[in-house]
Length: 248
Ligand SMILES: NC(=O)c1ccc[n+]([C@@H]2O[C@H](COP(=O)([O-])OP(=O)(O)OC[C@H]3O[C@@H](n4cnc5c(N)ncnc54)[C@H](O)[C@@H]3O)[C@@H](O)[C@H]2O)c1
Image 1: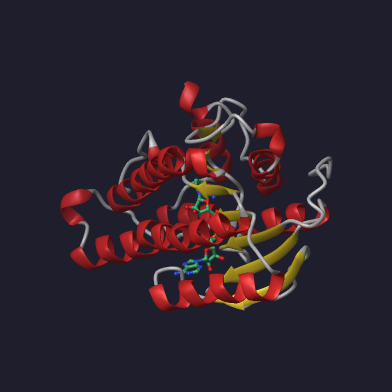
Image 2: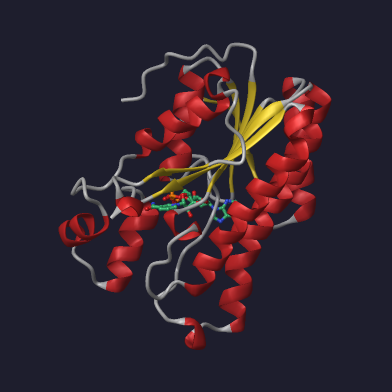
Protein backbone atom coordinates (compact mmCIF):
# COMPACT_ATOMS: atom_id res chain seq x y z
CA UNK A 1 0.00 0.00 0.00
CA UNK A 2 3.07 2.25 -0.09
CA UNK A 3 2.35 5.38 -2.08
CA UNK A 4 5.30 6.43 -4.23
CA UNK A 5 5.15 10.11 -3.32
CA UNK A 6 8.94 10.36 -3.35
CA UNK A 7 11.06 10.74 -6.43
CA UNK A 8 14.32 8.87 -5.90
CA UNK A 9 15.32 8.91 -9.55
CA UNK A 10 19.13 8.94 -9.76
CA UNK A 11 19.50 7.62 -6.20
CA UNK A 12 21.35 4.38 -5.50
CA UNK A 13 20.26 2.21 -2.60
CA UNK A 14 21.40 -0.96 -0.83
CA UNK A 15 18.96 -3.15 1.11
CA UNK A 16 20.17 -6.05 3.29
CA UNK A 17 17.84 -8.86 4.34
CA UNK A 18 16.11 -8.11 1.05
CA UNK A 19 14.39 -11.47 0.57
CA UNK A 20 12.83 -11.29 4.06
CA UNK A 21 9.42 -9.90 4.93
CA UNK A 22 10.43 -6.28 5.51
CA UNK A 23 13.41 -6.23 3.15
CA UNK A 24 11.21 -7.31 0.27
CA UNK A 25 8.66 -4.54 0.95
CA UNK A 26 11.44 -1.96 1.39
CA UNK A 27 13.11 -3.01 -1.87
CA UNK A 28 9.78 -2.79 -3.71
CA UNK A 29 8.95 0.63 -2.24
CA UNK A 30 12.37 2.13 -2.99
CA UNK A 31 12.25 0.73 -6.53
CA UNK A 32 8.70 2.07 -7.06
CA UNK A 33 9.92 5.51 -5.94
CA UNK A 34 12.58 5.44 -8.65
CA UNK A 35 15.69 4.38 -6.72
CA UNK A 36 18.13 1.91 -8.25
CA UNK A 37 18.30 -0.84 -5.64
CA UNK A 38 20.99 -3.40 -4.94
CA UNK A 39 19.22 -6.10 -2.95
CA UNK A 40 21.24 -8.51 -0.87
CA UNK A 41 20.54 -11.48 1.38
CA UNK A 42 22.17 -14.71 2.47
CA UNK A 43 19.10 -16.51 1.09
CA UNK A 44 18.36 -17.04 -2.59
CA UNK A 45 16.88 -14.14 -4.51
CA UNK A 46 13.63 -15.53 -5.93
CA UNK A 47 11.23 -12.99 -7.35
CA UNK A 48 12.16 -9.57 -5.94
CA UNK A 49 10.17 -6.61 -7.29
CA UNK A 50 12.00 -3.28 -7.21
CA UNK A 51 15.52 -4.75 -7.27
CA UNK A 52 17.81 -3.59 -10.08
CA UNK A 53 20.37 -6.19 -9.02
CA UNK A 54 20.92 -8.88 -6.39
CA UNK A 55 24.10 -10.00 -4.65
CA UNK A 56 24.23 -12.88 -2.23
CA UNK A 57 26.22 -12.01 0.91
CA UNK A 58 26.52 -12.88 4.59
CA UNK A 59 26.44 -9.60 6.55
CA UNK A 60 28.55 -11.09 9.34
CA UNK A 61 31.47 -11.73 6.97
CA UNK A 62 33.78 -8.70 6.60
CA UNK A 63 35.12 -9.70 3.19
CA UNK A 64 31.68 -10.37 1.76
CA UNK A 65 30.33 -7.04 3.05
CA UNK A 66 33.33 -5.13 1.69
CA UNK A 67 32.89 -6.82 -1.70
CA UNK A 68 29.13 -6.20 -1.66
CA UNK A 69 29.44 -2.45 -1.11
CA UNK A 70 32.37 -2.15 -3.51
CA UNK A 71 30.48 -3.96 -6.28
CA UNK A 72 27.38 -1.84 -5.63
CA UNK A 73 29.36 1.38 -5.99
CA UNK A 74 31.19 0.05 -9.03
CA UNK A 75 27.98 -1.05 -10.73
CA UNK A 76 25.80 1.98 -9.90
CA UNK A 77 28.43 4.73 -9.50
CA UNK A 78 27.69 5.59 -5.88
CA UNK A 79 25.57 4.95 -2.81
CA UNK A 80 22.97 7.32 -1.31
CA UNK A 81 20.66 5.14 0.80
CA UNK A 82 21.31 2.00 2.82
CA UNK A 83 18.74 -0.02 4.73
CA UNK A 84 20.16 -2.65 7.05
CA UNK A 85 17.37 -5.16 7.71
CA UNK A 86 19.20 -8.51 7.85
CA UNK A 87 18.93 -10.25 11.21
CA UNK A 88 18.12 -13.54 12.92
CA UNK A 89 15.94 -14.40 15.93
CA UNK A 90 15.63 -17.88 17.38
CA UNK A 91 15.53 -17.61 21.17
CA UNK A 92 13.13 -19.19 23.64
CA UNK A 93 15.12 -19.15 26.91
CA UNK A 94 16.26 -16.61 29.55
CA UNK A 95 19.88 -15.52 29.93
CA UNK A 96 21.28 -18.28 32.16
CA UNK A 97 20.09 -20.86 29.62
CA UNK A 98 21.45 -19.00 26.59
CA UNK A 99 24.43 -20.90 25.16
CA UNK A 100 27.65 -19.06 24.42
CA UNK A 101 27.38 -20.16 20.81
CA UNK A 102 23.84 -18.84 20.46
CA UNK A 103 24.87 -15.52 21.97
CA UNK A 104 27.79 -15.24 19.54
CA UNK A 105 25.67 -16.23 16.55
CA UNK A 106 23.05 -13.59 17.35
CA UNK A 107 25.61 -10.84 17.95
CA UNK A 108 27.56 -11.80 14.83
CA UNK A 109 24.64 -11.40 12.46
CA UNK A 110 22.56 -8.70 14.14
CA UNK A 111 25.20 -6.41 15.64
CA UNK A 112 28.45 -7.17 13.85
CA UNK A 113 26.48 -7.39 10.61
CA UNK A 114 25.04 -3.91 11.14
CA UNK A 115 28.49 -2.60 12.12
CA UNK A 116 30.20 -4.04 9.05
CA UNK A 117 27.49 -2.82 6.68
CA UNK A 118 27.48 0.68 8.17
CA UNK A 119 31.25 0.89 8.04
CA UNK A 120 31.39 0.27 4.31
CA UNK A 121 28.19 2.15 3.51
CA UNK A 122 29.43 5.25 5.32
CA UNK A 123 32.73 5.19 3.42
CA UNK A 124 30.84 4.98 0.13
CA UNK A 125 28.42 7.74 1.13
CA UNK A 126 31.24 10.08 2.10
CA UNK A 127 32.54 9.67 -1.43
CA UNK A 128 29.05 10.33 -2.85
CA UNK A 129 28.77 13.54 -0.79
CA UNK A 130 26.28 12.26 1.77
CA UNK A 131 23.44 9.84 2.30
CA UNK A 132 20.92 8.28 4.62
CA UNK A 133 21.22 5.03 6.54
CA UNK A 134 18.22 3.29 8.09
CA UNK A 135 18.88 0.45 10.50
CA UNK A 136 16.00 -1.87 11.24
CA UNK A 137 16.31 -2.25 15.00
CA UNK A 138 13.36 -3.37 17.17
CA UNK A 139 11.11 -2.37 20.04
CA UNK A 140 13.50 -4.79 21.80
CA UNK A 141 16.12 -2.06 21.33
CA UNK A 142 14.39 -0.19 24.13
CA UNK A 143 12.00 -2.66 25.79
CA UNK A 144 12.74 -6.40 25.92
CA UNK A 145 10.28 -9.23 25.50
CA UNK A 146 10.73 -12.32 27.69
CA UNK A 147 13.29 -14.99 26.81
CA UNK A 148 15.22 -13.01 24.20
CA UNK A 149 18.45 -12.02 26.00
CA UNK A 150 20.86 -12.13 23.06
CA UNK A 151 18.38 -10.72 20.53
CA UNK A 152 17.57 -7.88 22.92
CA UNK A 153 21.26 -7.13 23.51
CA UNK A 154 21.99 -7.29 19.79
CA UNK A 155 19.17 -4.83 19.02
CA UNK A 156 20.14 -2.44 21.84
CA UNK A 157 23.59 -2.40 20.25
CA UNK A 158 22.14 -1.60 16.82
CA UNK A 159 20.58 1.50 18.35
CA UNK A 160 23.95 2.38 19.91
CA UNK A 161 25.67 2.09 16.54
CA UNK A 162 22.92 4.21 14.98
CA UNK A 163 23.24 7.04 17.50
CA UNK A 164 27.02 6.97 17.54
CA UNK A 165 27.32 7.16 13.75
CA UNK A 166 24.61 9.84 13.58
CA UNK A 167 26.72 11.99 15.87
CA UNK A 168 30.00 11.37 14.07
CA UNK A 169 28.68 11.98 10.55
CA UNK A 170 26.03 14.65 11.17
CA UNK A 171 28.26 17.38 9.74
CA UNK A 172 29.44 15.26 6.86
CA UNK A 173 26.09 14.84 5.15
CA UNK A 174 25.11 11.43 6.42
CA UNK A 175 21.98 10.91 8.50
CA UNK A 176 21.64 7.66 10.43
CA UNK A 177 18.34 6.56 11.93
CA UNK A 178 16.74 3.42 13.28
CA UNK A 179 13.25 2.04 12.90
CA UNK A 180 11.96 0.04 15.85
CA UNK A 181 9.28 -2.27 14.49
CA UNK A 182 6.79 -3.87 16.83
CA UNK A 183 5.16 -7.13 15.77
CA UNK A 184 5.21 -7.10 11.98
CA UNK A 185 3.71 -9.93 9.95
CA UNK A 186 6.80 -11.52 8.38
CA UNK A 187 8.34 -15.00 8.25
CA UNK A 188 10.46 -14.08 11.32
CA UNK A 189 7.38 -13.34 13.44
CA UNK A 190 5.40 -16.34 12.15
CA UNK A 191 8.33 -18.71 12.85
CA UNK A 192 8.84 -17.24 16.34
CA UNK A 193 5.15 -17.72 17.23
CA UNK A 194 5.23 -21.28 15.94
CA UNK A 195 8.40 -22.04 17.93
CA UNK A 196 6.79 -20.72 21.10
CA UNK A 197 3.38 -22.27 20.40
CA UNK A 198 1.65 -18.89 20.49
CA UNK A 199 -1.70 -17.98 18.98
CA UNK A 200 -1.44 -15.15 16.41
CA UNK A 201 -4.58 -13.28 17.54
CA UNK A 202 -3.47 -13.45 21.14
CA UNK A 203 0.00 -12.11 20.28
CA UNK A 204 -1.41 -9.31 18.14
CA UNK A 205 -3.72 -8.14 20.92
CA UNK A 206 -1.09 -8.49 23.63
CA UNK A 207 1.64 -6.64 21.74
CA UNK A 208 -0.30 -3.93 19.95
CA UNK A 209 -2.92 -1.49 21.23
CA UNK A 210 -4.09 -1.36 17.59
CA UNK A 211 -4.92 -5.05 17.98
CA UNK A 212 -3.20 -6.29 14.85
CA UNK A 213 0.21 -7.01 13.40
CA UNK A 214 1.93 -4.33 11.38
CA UNK A 215 2.47 -4.89 7.67
CA UNK A 216 5.91 -4.78 6.01
CA UNK A 217 4.72 -1.93 3.75
CA UNK A 218 4.07 0.15 6.88
CA UNK A 219 7.76 -0.19 7.71
CA UNK A 220 8.73 0.57 4.09
CA UNK A 221 6.73 3.82 4.20
CA UNK A 222 8.83 5.02 7.14
CA UNK A 223 12.05 3.94 5.41
CA UNK A 224 11.16 6.12 2.41
CA UNK A 225 10.54 9.10 4.68
CA UNK A 226 13.87 8.59 6.48
CA UNK A 227 15.73 8.31 3.17
CA UNK A 228 14.07 11.40 1.73
CA UNK A 229 14.76 15.08 2.30
CA UNK A 230 11.39 15.25 4.05
CA UNK A 231 13.28 14.02 7.14
CA UNK A 232 16.29 16.31 6.62
CA UNK A 233 16.44 17.41 10.30
CA UNK A 234 16.11 13.87 11.66
CA UNK A 235 19.20 11.91 12.64
CA UNK A 236 20.08 9.56 15.48
CA UNK A 237 16.37 8.89 15.92
CA UNK A 238 14.70 5.63 16.93
CA UNK A 239 11.31 5.60 15.22
CA UNK A 240 8.87 3.12 16.72
CA UNK A 241 6.42 1.65 14.23
CA UNK A 242 4.71 -0.62 16.68
CA UNK A 243 0.94 -0.13 16.76
CA UNK A 244 1.40 1.69 20.06
CA UNK A 245 3.35 -1.07 21.86
CA UNK A 246 5.92 1.21 23.47
CA UNK A 247 3.24 3.64 24.61
CA UNK A 248 1.36 0.97 26.52
N1 LIG B 1 8.97 -9.20 12.22
C1 LIG B 1 8.99 -8.58 13.37
O1 LIG B 1 8.00 -8.62 14.12
C2 LIG B 1 10.19 -7.76 13.78
C3 LIG B 1 10.06 -6.95 14.92
C4 LIG B 1 11.13 -6.13 15.28
C5 LIG B 1 12.27 -6.12 14.52
N2 LIG B 1 12.38 -6.90 13.41
C6 LIG B 1 13.60 -6.78 12.61
O2 LIG B 1 13.23 -6.43 11.29
C7 LIG B 1 14.25 -6.87 10.39
C8 LIG B 1 13.62 -7.64 9.23
O3 LIG B 1 13.05 -8.82 9.78
P1 LIG B 1 11.84 -9.62 9.12
O4 LIG B 1 10.76 -9.67 10.11
O5 LIG B 1 11.60 -9.12 7.74
O6 LIG B 1 12.51 -11.07 9.13
P2 LIG B 1 12.82 -12.10 7.96
O7 LIG B 1 13.36 -13.30 8.66
O8 LIG B 1 11.64 -12.25 7.08
O9 LIG B 1 13.99 -11.37 7.14
C9 LIG B 1 15.32 -11.31 7.60
C10 LIG B 1 16.23 -11.57 6.42
O10 LIG B 1 17.60 -11.49 6.86
C11 LIG B 1 18.32 -12.48 6.16
N3 LIG B 1 19.54 -12.86 6.86
C12 LIG B 1 19.65 -13.60 7.99
N4 LIG B 1 20.93 -13.78 8.31
C13 LIG B 1 21.66 -13.14 7.36
C14 LIG B 1 23.05 -12.98 7.15
N5 LIG B 1 23.96 -13.51 7.97
N6 LIG B 1 23.45 -12.26 6.08
C15 LIG B 1 22.54 -11.73 5.22
N7 LIG B 1 21.21 -11.84 5.36
C16 LIG B 1 20.78 -12.55 6.43
C17 LIG B 1 17.35 -13.66 6.05
O11 LIG B 1 17.72 -14.55 5.02
C18 LIG B 1 16.03 -12.95 5.80
O12 LIG B 1 15.74 -12.85 4.42
C19 LIG B 1 15.23 -7.68 11.23
O13 LIG B 1 16.31 -6.85 11.57
C20 LIG B 1 14.43 -8.02 12.47
O14 LIG B 1 15.25 -8.26 13.58
C21 LIG B 1 11.37 -7.75 13.04
